[in-house]
Amino acid sequence: MAGGKETPRQRMIGMMYLVLTALLALQVSNQILQKFVLINDGLERTSKNYVQKNLFSVNIISSTVEQQGNNKVDIPKVEAAKEIRQKSAELVSYLEEAKTKLIEESNAIDDQGNFKSSALKNVDIPGNLFNNNRLGYDMQEKLNEFPEELEQILAGLNIDMSFERIAKNADEIDLFKNDVDVNFKDYVNLNYVKSPIGAVLAIISQHQNEVLNIESEALTAITNSLGSFIFEADKLKARIAANSNVVAAGTTFEAEMFLASSSSSTELKMTADGREIPVEEGFGQIKFPVAPASNYDDRGLAARSLKGEITVPIGGEDSVFTIDYDYFVAQPVIKVSSEVVNQLYAECANDLVIEVPALGNTYAPNFSVSGGQAVKGSRPSDVTIIPAASGKVVIGVSSGGNKIGSVDYDIKPVPDPSIIPYNGDRKIDLQNSTPVNGLLNLQIRAVPEPTFGRTMPRDANFEVTAGEVRLVRNDVPRESVAISGQNIAVRNLLAQAQSGDRLVVIVKEVTRTNFRGSKIKSAVNEVFPIPIK
Image (cartoon, rainbow, N blue to C red; front, side, top):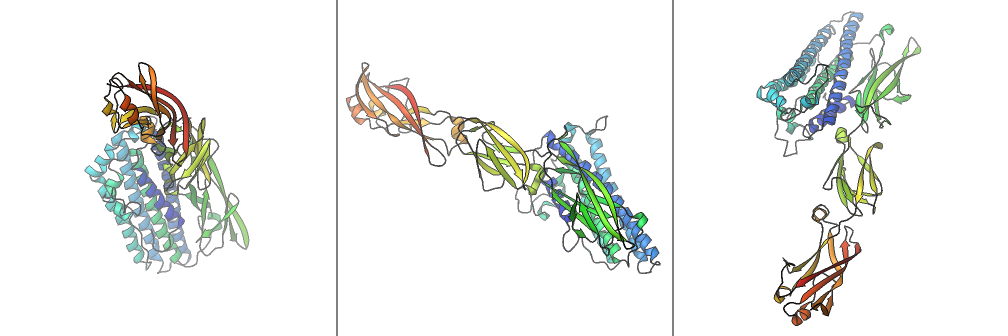
């Protein structure tokens, strides 16, 4: 945004845009699409607050110049403020028309005025409207012209201020510029092509917020360039302006609290829910972690209220202005990715990826486990769960010290391996007789169950560690050798073998080596003959 140190509001707007843009790449569920609707509603309410604040700023600039005798240096600043307000209003209206067109073409709203989940998931209409019909490229041009126009207006007032482009291509965004799968995309393809309607609406509403924020910064710069500010106590009003009044649990609530006629030259004291907050140029900076609610409604929301107080010296006395601000805590959705979908294997290293898409880059997870233990992986979302021998595993997920929720899994026992004879690398056919020379390299292998072997390779290392192989003739055992590993020393037995004899394999024990290198022995009782011809 503006040159110099980035404000908390600017950081929040930038973060929200990146989160919204990144979420477009996800295959989202109906529940997550409904969250986009809620986020869009919160952004639209914030835009209305912005408009009122900016209108008040224009009025303050005008009244201050008038009260100071219409100084010829300051008179052009009134017209500049009005021009900025007009340009901002026109651009916000243009963006609103784009949202209306998208909703109309997709028939996204039913007769009761509610969004249709089926329409919100449509990914073809945004691409057609914004790419094929070039609306997105026209929007990009208008969005990026706006900050340049405001820079020129301010320059005419000898105010040196610069703003960032609003509608950026992927290679202009830190999150994507090094991602070879994305960084070649322009603004339109990044945001609108193959993107669900619910997400696109939120992106456009976020752009409206950005436009109004740039306007607010420009008007603030004009206000700060005026002479001494005159308070009119009868017009003082307390306000809170949040980026959104819908906040996902585990994220941070950020807002500005201010007096509508606030001045950087006035000593103000502000509190939010009894906690004193820092004041920067007359604006209180509200920031606190949002704890999960104990109960959510059927929309996944929990109502919260914030009480603010602003103390301002007027006429030698402190006057206190209060304000109540209502917002909602949204229940985050925990997304778990795993090769093992419904159950976790007992005493094995089950690798999971546990994410909370709503938290975006603020996600800093910690995992607690009941019925097992957790080992964190190389990435924040990676975790290895080692369940106990039986029962259930409950995985608690928290972020930044705030509990998000939990997921639970049944504990599945490790499936028994199959005992299979091989001659070298060739599986022996037990239904037919095998010549003696086809048994010289006899191996008795313990082969893991296919799904377990594929998904848990570090834990699927089996071997036969106890048993014997007997040479049997006419149902009478003759000689035998012990099984103590994969390879069996049967040459002496085979030297005595005749056609019609059998090698009877008796397996008594299988040992599994787990991911830690520990040996886990299991008693078995498996017997099968190998006929000799």
